[in-house]
Image (cartoon, rainbow, N blue to C red; front, side):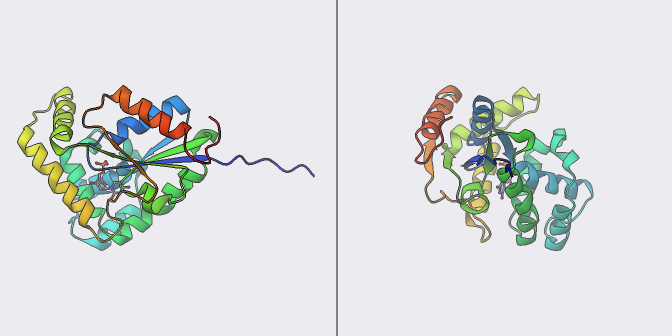
Length: 224
Ligand code: DC
């Protein structure tokens, strides 16, 4: 009997604080390597957006867990997903254990069997290398100073035609860092075995080529 050959999927995780450039890096790497990409923050944002729209109290943990269990994937393409208010609400509800466990399976399934039969998966978020895929082939932790992250976020908002107050954005980013790093459930940490990439002074191209070099030389890496 001929058994179908299942090739192991290469898994890359990219974690880091808000606006560190991990999403941009994950998308660029996914394109270069032809891997599938999952922005895990989008899942938390979709849960938060649903709650904001339905006027559900964000401090109601059970309601947040119920919203995560019935995640509406249509919200992943909603324009309001990227709003600062949605990000802040996502950070708030992502502290809840019930929310995190409801979203765990969908993330692990994506990593193990990426859509479209892709030969690899890239997940970016806060706990992808520490909790979701602790055995990932390559783990990156992307960071940048809060001033540089605020500058990037302000430029992004301006490009969308929204007004951006730099000081307010920086303090929101710092508040979100504190919330994401100090929570008890899956706090933002540098995962064991991760390579730290500080992008404060790196262009997108430089960050992508540094990350590609890390991927190519990772121990146990399958040739790409
Ligand atoms: O990366 P982002 O700004 O889209 O994430 C929004 C919030 O979602 C973030 O502040 C914390 C939460 N989050 C999380 O707890 N775990 C993840 N893997 C990704 C995001």
